[in-house]
Image (cartoon, rainbow, N blue to C red; front, side):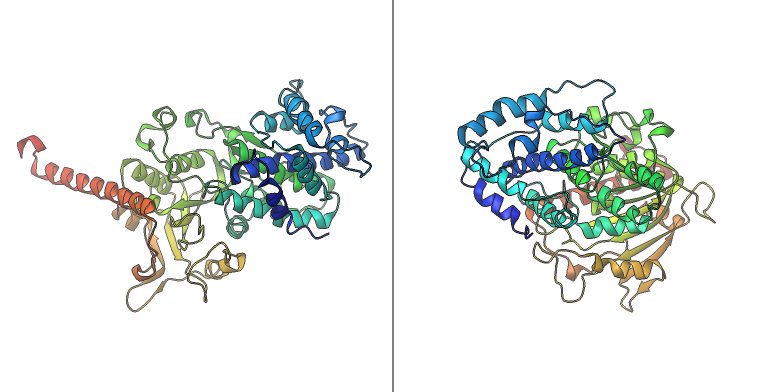
Length: 502
């Protein structure tokens, strides 16, 4: 069936409801209904499996099939009756489900999802229309499941438009490319500690899908990914996303990944592969910073997540992380300590510079992908696990001035990276423009761990919005101040004087 315009149909209905005051509420309203519809479809599969002896945790009258489905016989709830049912029965009951401690994750999910979600609609007739549109999707039909992926991405892009740029949605081209580059194997555990709507998790599941050969492989695949997400709406979206991808018990934890001391991380907490796009531009309070080593206590969340990633990557593990430019050029105390630790304790082998408009039009903050392994590179100098770091700049594809909402990045645009990756060589033009270059670890140490190499030519840089421009200048100023302070300290040591004597 044709369901490509489903989101637009839902949007048009909800715009008429006085309880919906913007995109964020519309999306939250839409997603709890999608969750119940998808969950009901999964329950049908579990009930069909005789080995499960499955019994739903949702009371029978509250299951989607028993209140949402309209059989056109005039018996379906609508108007005030439907509104009262949802507000007075459905939500209170699901928020307060009584579950035994040993209940499976598939049951706990329902209570967790509804503990932080809201029902905004005030018009029961319009609510019935929304429910009917969502019920058109048949999640037992392979084509509908496949087409739902496109609808799902439409929801995520709308989520960005609602003012949550960069927090929840990383373009599928990037998640697919990073996962393919990390080459996960069935039996390895992959994690994203700010999993948002689950993009990296589903890219990993899709990559591993073709490795399944036996029923045991299916069981292994079911437990291949781990997500952690703090915010209620993306947490709900990620749960739904994994259910749509046939994961029976999505292993996504509703928590603040930075909320526990990294010193408490043990081997059982570590994973083989980490693929992430940590939130950047945000700041943390002192209580969170105290969970990290004193020399790495940064006020920027992206920095702290890099520390967390290093602590949670198993020996021999591989990581691919999207980071902002500020992490590359920053040489303040915390950033310097973090990058030095990476070079000493990990094999930081590749940094990919990405065009600034990949996340356009939601943000123009320039980003990069840093790839590193928890291993010692062959030939690394004493005291370091890194031998060489390759830098590669991905330029805009031919015919593109910048990416946009109507011209987003596609997987094919990453092909130049793949071609270069498999045949690495330095690319330096006659005028000195460096598109690709290899630095040995000592060269980077001598540069004070400034990873801002193979940058984009000045004339091609986009003018940032004022707020982002100020943020970038502020980061560069902090970096410059720190560099000046270090130079002054060295001069003072040489001269044997202190500031007070000058």
